[in-house]
Image (tube, rainbow, N blue to C red; front, side):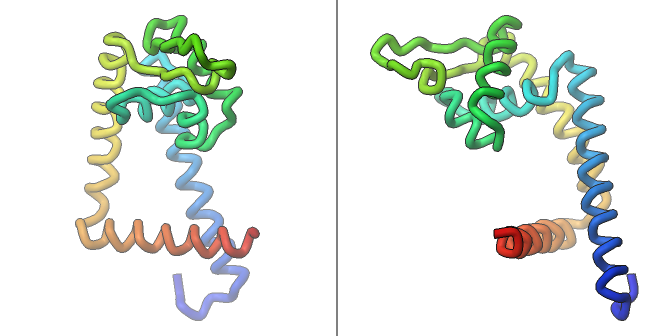
Length: 154
């Protein structure tokens, strides 16, 4: 893109690149989820639970994944039925749904192993497009743009 493009041209290219990238990420996630027999929400809950050594509550999962607690509770119920997670009841809690600890079962850890393989396969392809320095600059630039956009949208 030329440096002397108009604001409108730069805006159009910016939106096209960001939107197209997001669409491709969603398409890849859908393909990988289908291959693994998961839904998109299942994937993210399993991913974050797999990164936790002690488990997480529904409220923590919702905050981490950026979704509502109700959506996480539905996902946890679905994953529980599939025997991929277990919810540890706290008999003293009056808000058990959101504060009970959720952990992966052995079957959940096995699925997470396949999820990790898929992530590694995808990230290997992405990483092949950039050298290490370029990748760091890209992530730093995206972080700066996101911070700027947060400031504008508030």
